[in-house]
Picture 1 (tube, rainbow, N blue to C red):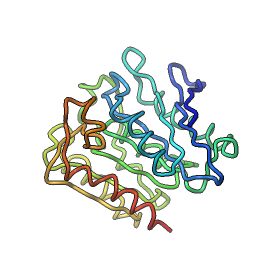
Picture 2 (cartoon, rainbow, N blue to C red; picture 1 turned 180 degrees about the vertical axis):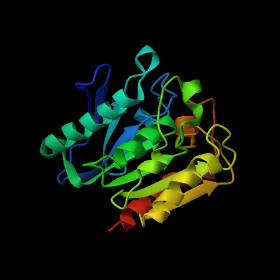
Picture 3 (cartoon, rainbow, N blue to C red; picture 1 turned 90 degrees about the vertical axis):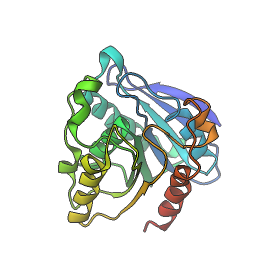
Picture 4 (tube, one colour; picture 1 turned 45 degrees about the vertical axis):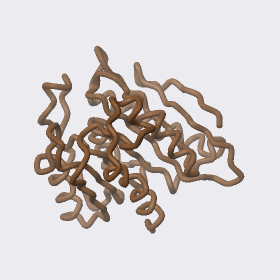
Amino acid sequence: MQIRNVKLAQAHSSLDIYHSASDVVLPAVVIVPGGSYQQIKGRDSERVAMTLAIHAFQSFVVRYPVLEYRDYQAAKVAISQAFDYIVAHAAELGVDPEQLGILGFSAGGQLAAAYSNQSGTKARFAALGYPVIKPTIDERMGVTTEDVSQLVTDRTPATFVWGSVNDGLTPYLDHINAYVTALAQHGVPFELHEFGTGNHGIALANKYTGIVNRDRVDRHMSRWFPLFLEWLGNLK
């Protein structure tokens, strides 16, 4: 595997590329980590990218502006530029553009949802982990966002969503419920898993992410990842 980073035109943004040598083109996932715009969380980025790589995906991580450079609109531009780069270099990256999707966690889930609903999106599927949906924690994060459930249309790509009933930061009724309701109203294929264990910010919920996440491990909630892979395999 070759791991490298390319700069994006958007300031303070770049794309990590986890390129697996392959005899065939592979499906690919663009990961948008969480971190409340204060950092790019390692639990949501390289560890998820490596896990996807061993399951025969080309994987990528968008590093969008954080800390003093944090800006929701700039982050959206960075994600769009990342997809443009991947599609433009699909052959050399071993990517099948028709099997290219986006996976976001927490604040990254809000950004992933926004991109998947963008006119001309290149995401063929989306996965949102305990996503921020409404701008209820903008003040806490220091950004101005939007209610991404209002962006859903009949053209929104198939979406996989998961979270925990114990999530106090982005409670189900305020966030996930609003988004999956919009998906249902627009006839968008989706799958939802709201786990009775776990919590917000738990990433893969296994030991691999737990060792960089205060040992936060939940065997039951870790089922989201194999369920996601199974869901992807059933997409038409």
